[in-house]
Length: 252
Image (cartoon, rainbow, N blue to C red):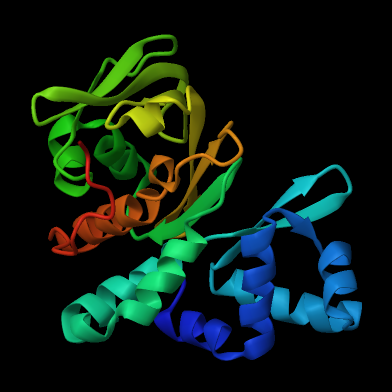
């Protein structure tokens, strides 16, 4: 379980913040690539990356013999939800700008969060329309959730997004194609893909959402809502309450 103290520690160091900036500019970099950019020892860069990974603001994925590093803005969203919106909303502009920057990448985005629940309860929260509407901006998800079936998200009397369930393996994995319809700009991006993976870790679940097949220069609205959705999901399952933080996406 990632603690707030770990997130604050990770963001407190200038070198680690510059590493996040480097991943913001180019996501999915190897240790060697970051070492060349920073002019530091391999050991020094690796040490900073371990702290960022322990805080959850960086996630890694193996590609062949290389270990690639990806930015994960979800923990920073948690800091925003807990400290900014509750206590210092008028002073939140700096964190808001950071949040917007972290969510502005294209092509492939990964989001990771730990939730104290069971895989079965988490799967139900992801696929049960009555539950999902509580943390996904009131959008109701309609689907049979079988491989090859269609799904759609309906809000304000119109289809907000839709696609196909490409792989349905409850309660651990869901892969969907994704088409956004809330504005002409996001419609023009065409079809992307969302992969949801659940792993049980002791009494909690590690939830990873990968949104890929995004076109170069895609509108950040296509994927920028995930941190808010995941933060709302975590809050609902762990406390039974819903977030009062304003939406980060305004559906047309």
